[in-house]
Every structure is written in structure tokens, then in C-alpha cells.
Length: 417
Image (tube, rainbow, N blue to C red; front, side, top):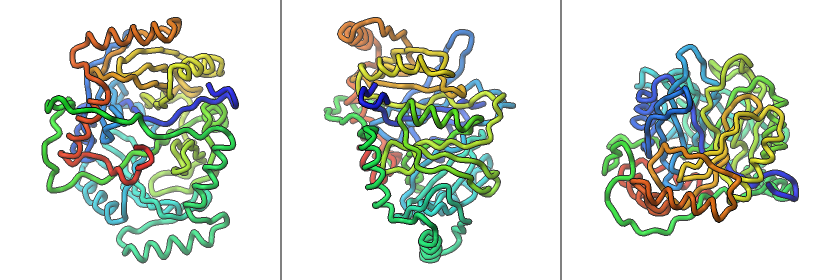
């Protein structure tokens, strides 16, 4: 933990959901959304077992999105949104046209939030997705105006700018970013969002992905997107806001009542970030029935070292409502799993320098000193079939993602690289 203000140095890494049918949802995200399956397998967790699929479009992240089976058909999704950035209104229109051909996709609707033009839709198993284009302006959130993508770009830009400039608190996005950077820095809550760098030679042309990704980009290019935020439904907004703000160090950047957006009812929302480039990395949305089990498989945050992981392990165990602590060594990472105060599974993860095929889960013993723990992990991963240095996996995966046209829109998230 950070001794100066008692919040950990962490960054958002990836997100996981439970679903009814892993194969069907994997097909949607690979075929329609352009993800590649980095690993997959069957998991036995005590009396429970299910299939898992790990997917990415960002080669520095082994997985950005995790899909796990085991969600009953009757259980609704508690995911408010899995959020992506897109480069232009033209790309939003192209994505919309692509989605309209998918029979399992519902709730396609557009919204103008002042800070972004956003296309919403619901995936074939009930998880809401957003694809947003940043406008370059800022108005306090939540904000909402209807958006008609049939309008020309110039008509949309003119209307949005006029609405923003008439809104109290309006400023240019760059000015908002600079102010937010100063606030986070003054609170000692500013952490580099960049993933660990890559400097490796590619020693093999064998694919690192568990499903074929192709060797050329398709004629109908995958959507130009970059994953950047997640939203979850909550039952007790004050309790969960306090947890993410005070315990995990997130800054509240907006709070209020969001009007109904298409088929989505009006709701109270809280926006949180630790990245001044994003108004929100995490969005809390009211409306979850407290009796409904969370469909969140994991909200994962990366920490810079073992010491921080040890510190947050100790700190979270003192937080009322945090439960079900599971320290796990994946070989690829040293991870602490636990449930937040509303039962959403969290993973706090320190990335190792190794890659082995997932899923693998060995016990993680915090009773070991650092040297003993690191040697223990090193010995196990080097003896595991499929082992390679993590940097080599990243380099090889990027080459494949580029060749297959599946690489995310890196220019939209340059600060992450």
C-alpha cells in the first residue's frame, strides 16, 4: 500500500463476465468484435466447474476480456457496460451497420454525452456494450442528449458543441485532463497506466493463440476499437462508491441522475478514474437487485510489485464486506482474488515475467519471503509445457494481431503503451 495516503498504486487491467454459453459468446467477440482467444480451458473450482475463454486485442495484455461459464439462464447480467473507444463517427456508423446484421444483438441506440458520442448495444447474452468517440469537450457528467447517426458529421458536431457550451461547467477536454492530472497528483493517486514494456526477439512462428486468428485482415475489417472502461450495476451506491474511492483510490469525476437512454431506464451513476485521460474507467450504476448474484467474473487491477500486492492483501482483509479471499499463483501473475462489498469478484495482480498456458491456478503463499516466492514460481513455470518469457509472448502476439487485422486501435490509447 502507498504509505503516504494509504491507497495502493494500481491501474485497471481487464474485465471478466459469467455467461450462459462460453462458445457462443466467444464466437461473437472473435467474429464480430475482433478479439483473439489467447487461452481457454476448463476450470474446477471446488464443487463448481466451468469453461473459460481469455481474449485480447491488446498484445501487452494476455487478456482484456474473460468469459466464464456457469451463469444460469434466469440470472440477469449485472454488467452495465463494457466500454470501447472508436476513432470517428464514421466508424460508429460502420459498427452499427455490422451489429444490425447480428440476430442476437439488441438495444442498439446512440447517445450524445457531451464528452462523447456513444453507440450502445446488448451482446447476445445480455451484457451491455458501449463504443464511444471522444468529442474534445467536457461537461459535467452525467449528461445526455439524443444522437441521430443519420445526421452528417458537421451537423452532429455543431449541435453537440452548442449544447456543451450552453452547459455550466463546460471546458475543453485538454483543460479538464490537466486539472484532473493535478488533482490526482496532489492526492498521490496518479499511477502510470502503461503496461510493462516489451523488448524481445521472436524465436518461433508458431501461433500463441488458442483459436486460429488468420494471417491476413478480412475484407470487412474488424471494428476499430480500444477497450477503456467498464460499468457495473450496484445495489448500495454509497457503500460501493466509498469502497472504490477510499480503499482503491479512485477519483469521483461525476455523479448524478442519468436520464433514460433508449431502452435503459434512468439511473443514478458515479464515474471514477485514476487516469486523467479518461473521465471514467469505472462506472457505478444503480438498479441492481441486492438479491441477484453478480455476473462479474473479475474486475482486475494491476499493481507494480509484490510489496504492493502484499500490502493490499493485508488492507482488504480489514474492509467490512470484502470476503472470499483467494491468493493464487497463475504463473503469468501473482494474484489476490476477493469479493468487493457487493460480491463482485476483484483480482489484484502483479504480472510475472513468464508466460504459461492458462488457466492454471496454484496456491500463492504470502507467508514466503519475496526471494523464496519468486524462486518457487520460477521453478514451476520453467517446468510447465508451453513456457516462454512473457516479453516473447507479447512480441509474438502483436505480430499476429497486426497480421490478422485484430490489433486494437492503438492510437486511441497511446498512453497505455
